[in-house]
Structures are given as structure tokens and as C-alpha cells.
Image 1 (cartoon, rainbow, N blue to C red):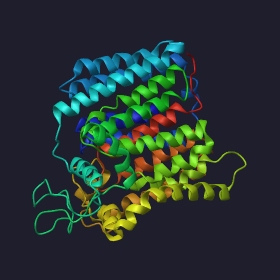
Image 2 (cartoon, rainbow, N blue to C red; image 1 turned 90 degrees about the vertical axis):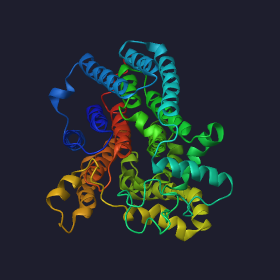
Image 3 (cartoon, rainbow, N blue to C red; image 1 turned 180 degrees about the horizontal axis):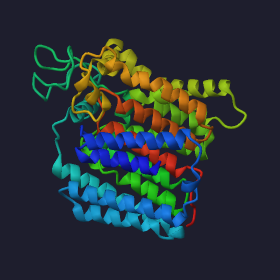
Image 4 (cartoon, one colour; image 1 turned 135 degrees about the horizontal axis):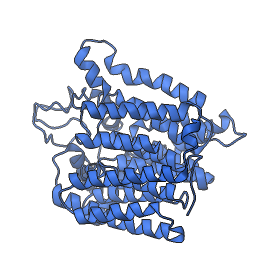
Length: 428
């Protein structure tokens, strides 16, 4: 799973997450690898690899990611090099110094990430940034973030929006297109620093720290570093994509499943309430059950999760039900097929432009993939993370819109699957 995370990370590095044939091939290879790990029995040749070989491979991947980030980042390169060196030190036997060293690594990372977006993209020309910043400012003033008052920053002929999204005055007819919990999680960054991206940086660092808290070995440290140094991480942060927050809530689900079962319904509720495509993971909640628990336990766990998500979401729904529905739900179906998406759908559309079921391809692929993981995967947090990775990776790879932020979530879930796998080398 660590190899799959690395492959997807390189794929989104090649063209900043936009379509390239090599990038699509890497995503396809990651799907095959993830499916093999998730659905097939363990391969003896792989399982028998010595620990030093496995840790050496993942340490090499961390170094490669550092180089890719360093080459793609025009500022704060010395700080980034420091993050890379500190991350690579996880390959050594650090014992009680492992966690403090990683804490220092995270502190340097946060400083570098802030320096990058403040220098390179203080006001990036991307609608996600406008959505988040204006919604946060408006909410603090008592304005409904789902009312359509956002400007179109791309021009009237933009291919980024589908029919009906722009009005005659070139303004959007939708409001904030994300669930309210993501806005509430980003709000502290705006309140404390005037920029929601500070919350994104904190979310990335917190997710990596939660991975690190699972164990104290080299494997855990290096895998957490592999996630932290994802080649597209600065692009994700400076663009203010909400997927960093989605990764954090998934990380809370994983740490609760491993360390605090009583908190699992609350963590799942936050996860479900953060992003629309969290619904793809709902059928997989059964994989988080403990031995002896049945379908009724899964139903109760799911009901609690939706109740908690509803507590946060319902006030915004009641504020203006139509505006909320149009912004959060309907807008997703109004969006057009993006020919720059890192998706097989782009390749298919170029050859079968009139194929009637083209846009239904991700949903058609989703059903058998979900059925397969429910059939083949056992009950454990590792199996849950692996199943979530495969299901979302297949869905994104055949979707009408699939960019770096979508795949960032998959990278995180794959790293979590690797961290909590049965082969965890807690060797100090």
C-alpha cells in the first residue's frame, strides 16, 4: 500500500494533478497493486522480504519525494531540505527519540508550508480559495455561506462550470460547494491568521502525527514521512482544497478504531460530514466491526455517525434548504467533464464521445469494486483503510473530475493502510 501511495504521489506531480498519459498509467498501476494487496492472498515472496529491505525501499521513496518537492518548490528550499533530512532520519534506530524528532519535522514542515503559500500564492486564482475565504468571512458576519453571491473569477466562457452555474451577470448561481463541517474546521485558520490555509497546514501535520502515534518503529515513521512529503502537498495547501480536512477526519476514524473505540461513532460522524464522497465509504463501515459484532451493530454505528454529522449540518440546511441543496448536492452533478482531469474518462471520451453511459462509468465501476472488498476483506482497521483506498481510487480514476486533491485523499488512506498493516516493524 505504501508503494501505491508513492505511485499516485508521483502521478499528481507530473502535471500538477492534471491529465498526462504517464500519470494515468501510474494511477492504473496503483489500482492494480492496491487490488492485489486488498483482494488477493499474501504473496510469500513479498512477505518474506527482510525488514531492512522493506525499510530501505520506503526510505528511498521518501528521498525521491523530497527531491520532487524540492525541484517543484521555488521558495523555502533549505527548509524543505531540512524536512526531507529529518524525515529520512526515521530509517535509523531512534528509540525514544523517534516521536520528538518527528514533532520537530512537523514544526519545520508547517513553517515551510506557510512560507510557500504566502510567497508563491498569497491570492491564488482558483475558485476554491474564493469559496473558502469569502464563506469564512461571511459566516463571521452572520451571512449564509450557501447563498449564491460568489463571483466568477475565470471569465464568462470558462469550461470549468456546467450549464446553469453562471447567471447573466457572470456570477455563480451556487454558494459554498462543501459541507458546513469543512468550513467550520477551516474557520480557525481564518480567525487566527486571516487565511483558511493555516487550518489546512495544521490538518496535514495532525494527520501525519496521528499516523506516527500508531507505533514507534521505523516503518511507522517512514510511512508517516511518505505521506507528509507527498509531492503535491504544497499545491493542495496553497489552493485551499478541503481534502486536507477530509484526510484529518479519516485519520481520526483510524486512530479511534485502533486506540479509542468509544470515540469511533463521533470520528465517523465528522468523517461523513466533511466531504460529499464520504458516502462511498459508508458500506465499508462493517469492516470496522470487532469479532462477534453483526449487521445490527454496523447499522447502529452508521446511524450514530449520521446523527453526529446531521447535528452539524442541519442548522445550515434549515437556514436555506434550497440554497444548501443546490450548492452542496446539485452543483456536483452540474459540473462538466473536464478534459484535463487525470481520469480514464478523458481517454474514453476522446474515443467514444457519443457513448451514452460514459458519465455513469465511475458509478458502474463502483458497485463491483465495493462488492469485491466487502467479500474479500476481513474486519480490521487495516482492511478498512485498504478497502477505502481501492474504492475511491477506482471511482476517481474513472470520474469526470479527478485532480490532485482527489488523489491526495487516496494517498493518505493508502499510507494509513500501510501503517496499520499486519507487517508493522516496531524495531525502535
